[in-house]
Amino acid sequence: MTAKTPKTPLEQRRLDAKTRASQWLADGNEAREGGNLGKAEQCYSKAQFWHDRANLLNNRAAVAAPTR
Image (cartoon, rainbow, N blue to C red):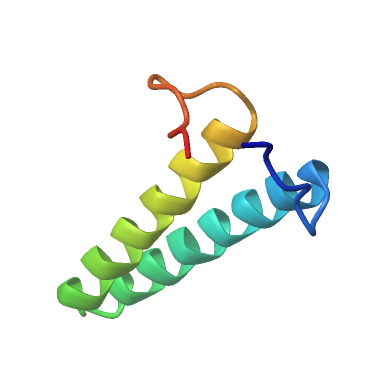
C-alpha cells in the first residue's frame, strides 16, 4: 500500500509543532506563576507532546516514527 502525500508540507508541519510546543510551555509557565498548578501540569503535558512531535518530524527522536 502506498502512502498518501500529506496535505501540508513537511517544513510547515515542523514549524507548527515547534510553535505549538512553545505556546503550551508559555501557557504552563503563566499558569504556574499564577498559582494554578493543575492547569500548569496539563499545559506542560501538551507542550511535551508537541515537542516530541517536532523531534519526530526533524528526525531527532529517540524512537522511530510509527508505521501505518
